[in-house]
Image 1 (cartoon, rainbow, N blue to C red):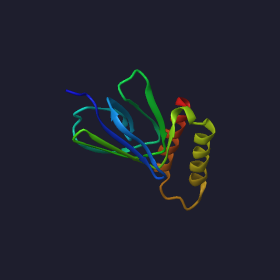
Image 2: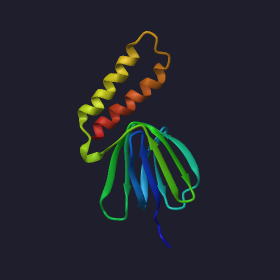
Image 3: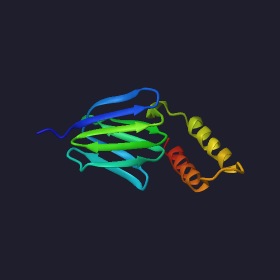
Image 4: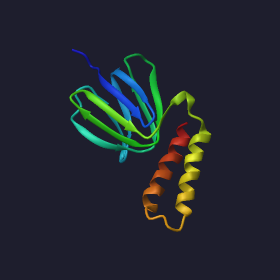
Length: 131
């Protein structure tokens, strides 16, 4: 019996990862959650933050994702994200730029979703601390 499952991470630009993994830690909208083999089916939004997974070695792979969705069905996990950057290539300036973009949108007079943008800013600031 194997404890691995299929994981696909796809960004708007490309396929980021595809393979068998033992677990994945996801930055869910209401908190981080862990997906293991035989996880119950689910669909969830992903907030900006770090997604981590292990292929079975002691090394973990880590990606900064700017938000998206995850679907878990029958040991197949699909993660669709706006963008994904390998954890070792994340530049704090990139996250800072995203925060600046959110600040610009928050200061615009015609912005209608200020609560959502405020939450996104908080998530980005938390990710910046983890970078």
